[in-house]
Image (cartoon, rainbow, N blue to C red; front, side, top):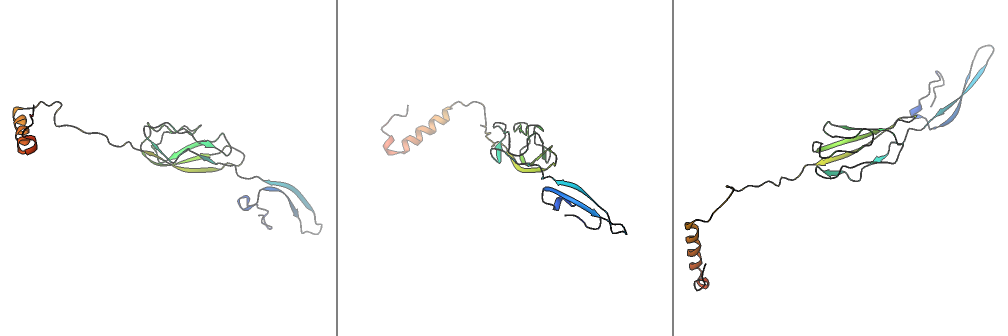
Length: 160
């Protein structure tokens, strides 16, 4: 799109392609001048990871860039450890959470593409016993014998 009055070209509203822009004067001796103008398309910033969520103890995912290679990766908010050049995420060094990973191209018409990525925390598998070791007591053995004697079918069997 071009403004007829000023000659300003709105490249974001223009279809990519090559155009000829002509300026014609309106004075007593009209004249004109033409220049070629090329509106290039935005770089393709397409990329993807193999999944949207990764466990904090899993393998480090690397994206596949299907657009223009050679760009830079960033992530927001802070906490995701990502290689700016390759986009590989170090999941074990990252803080669990959801991030927006952005790839910015370095071509003639830079562009950005973004995908969400989640680093999932490990499940809490902790548990404990009240003591580190246990030994049966005489009282525990007597309780077992009483319990066995209380069941009629077990009275004839020996406990130990």
